[in-house]
Image (cartoon, rainbow, N blue to C red; front, side, top):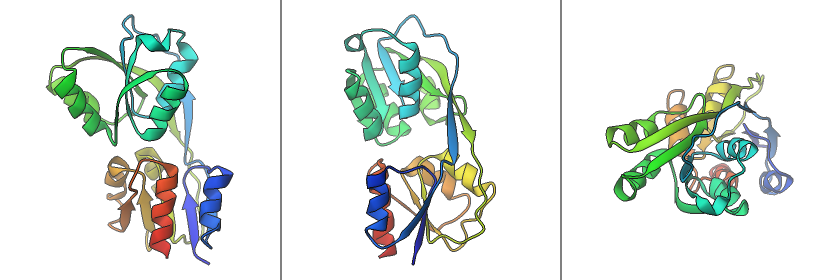
Length: 217
C-alpha cells in the first residue's frame, strides 16, 4: 500500500480523503506556533495577514470593531477565518508576492499593519519598501520547528509551509519521494532538496490532498 506523510495534523474528513482513495497516512505537526507578546499599533485601518496564525495571534490581543478595518490576506482559509470573525476582506491572494502587487497598484498611499511570524519571509516587506508603501511590521507569533525522524520511506509528503519543509528535511530525506506543496513559496523551499515536487491548484489542505491522490493514482 502506498503511504502518505502529512506534515500537519489533518481533520478526520481530510484524512478520509486519503484513506478512501486506498492509501495509508501518517500525520504530525512539523511546526509549532507560539503567540508572542506584542503591542498593537495606534493605526489599525489596513491589516495584512499571510496566514491564519497571524489572525489568531491578532485576535488574542485585539478588541477593536472589525468593521472599522480592511483586511488583505494570503489564502482562502485565512480569508474564511477573517470573514467568520466579521472582518472586511478587500483582497485574498495566492501568495505574498501577488498580495504586494495588488497593494502597490491600488493602495499605495495607505498605511498598513502587517502581522507576521518572527521568521517571516522577505517577499512582501521588501516589495512594499521598494515601492514606498507605508507599513508597520508586528511580530505576532513564533514558528518553532518540531522535528521528527522517520525510519521509513513515504511515497508522498504533504507540505504546507516553508517552515514545515525546513523542519522535515533537517532530519529526513526526500529521496525517491514526491513532495506535494500548498503553494509556490513552499515549493521554492522544497526545490532546495528535490526536483520531484508538484504544487496544489489552491492554497487549501484539501487541494494538497487531491493533488497527492491524483499523483499516486
